[in-house]
Image 1 (tube, helix red, strand yellow):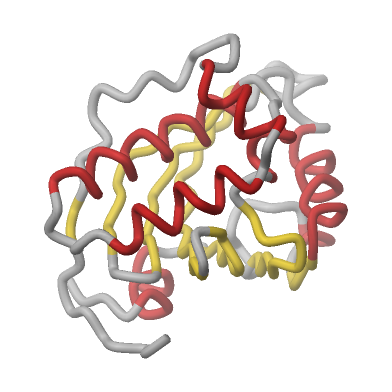
Image 2 (cartoon, one colour):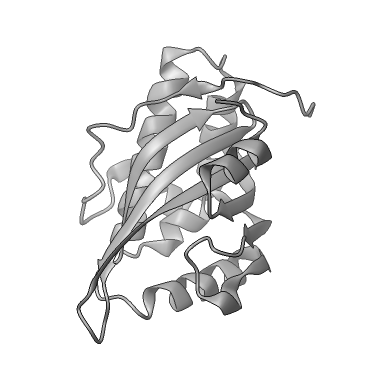
Length: 190
């Protein structure tokens, strides 16, 4: 797949997303039972033209489903969208505890990182704030909020992510401390 540079990308407004669903939808239950459906759906979405209204709607829905799955700790559903050998890179200062900085490979590592991230919080939630479709990459800004387990102190931080997709699955996730770093990694410009 070519590594073309897309200076703008297509902005997809994440307003009005339902990220608080407490149960899986019918299609989510199907995807967990038959994970290959997630890959087929993802491959279909990324074959559509970037300016396609259907592509934007389907990406908004997938982002809402992912945030909702994070918020209810439904990692079985989340993993259906990730290649089994995917690479998760967490940059220094990206909001993670220092021992999580670096590369993590595969589903088991994904679950372990989430376990470490959730440990210090009673109610960590994800709320998408921005999404830019840059072809085979997605740029995302997500607000992570919660309260400390011991102190109850409120915490809120933006997470800047670049997701690289191939054959309908995330093959690489990069978390950055700043928008500028993430934009550069995604091949975007302001």
